[in-house]
Length: 113
Length: 114
Image 1 (spheres, rainbow over the protein chains, first blue to last red):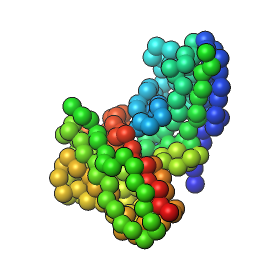
Image 2 (cartoon, chains in turn orange, green):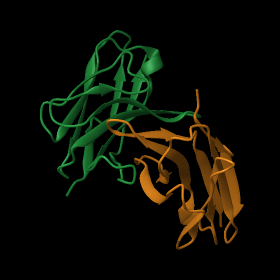
Image 3 (tube, each protein chain N blue to C red):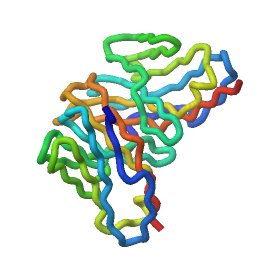
């Protein structure tokens, strides 16, 4: 049972374009929504995250948009660069004895030069 | 600081063999986690630990055992490997029990079970 659904599975964007990855969640008990970036052969690393009481968070070229009523959130990468080519995972966090992360399926992003 | 390290990086097993994956962190983190990553399924939590000497089951614990005898190490064991356990395994650690705390991931172990 996938509690966080992510789309698309893969995405190709031209250099300088906007990359958009979408996620939807089912459990209203989630407390935090991070995005992780993973390069080939490496482990995931935190990219940006948002609290559910905030509608948007921006860090440089990366922006999370959050729609609590629709239970959806998305990652926007502005002015996409070849170095942004990676796999991106959205996640949703609950704290139940430990910090529990539920990950989306992942999106493989390719930025063409 | 090395952060989170994992050994080995790659391993090939035959069905029925056993092995142990080692995770080590030098950040003095209380919480440690084992995940498996499979294509199209993201990362799924296998087991976790909230401190030295503790372990608990995650989402997909069957076929795995874990131990945390020292705060800095978290071991994942496969007693009798099956082809369904072919995956990339990631260890992670975090400092606090807070939703906003960051989990730091190791580089992964790619395991193939024939």
